[in-house]
Length: 165
Image (tube, rainbow, N blue to C red; front, side, top):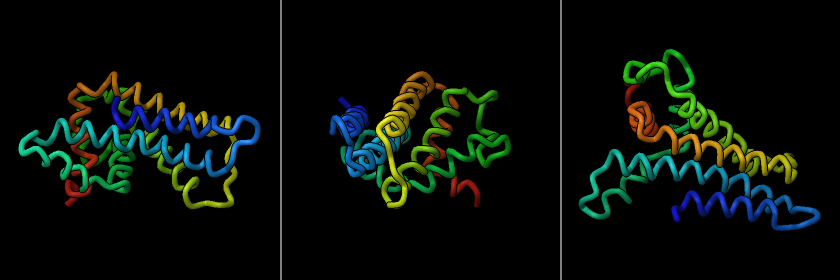
């Protein structure tokens, strides 16, 4: 099983861990873990599609340049009609791809709240909804991952900030 599937499973385990009164630590880690499931899934697919398999460590090394901020910016760009890579996209852009991009932005926002905003209180129902959003994004990605626009999107996750030069 892939890392992102394991991370979704771990997020669900954390959200349901305490039966009566879930600890904030468990709920916060569940939110963060749900985000990281989507983050790693997209990087894994990008590296598989964009980077050759030889030498053997090339793909592992190629995962490092992906950054949270650049990936969020590319996701935000995808949802705009005039973006830096619009000319590369086949119109109309698949709704599944937009679902993935919107989920990434939202889940990253939620992760920041979970990891850094100690005034934010999480509840199990809300956290399970966040995990559901991550699962829906993974499912949407599985339906669109072989489309030409998915290739542009994956390249943009890494290159969008350089395309603006």
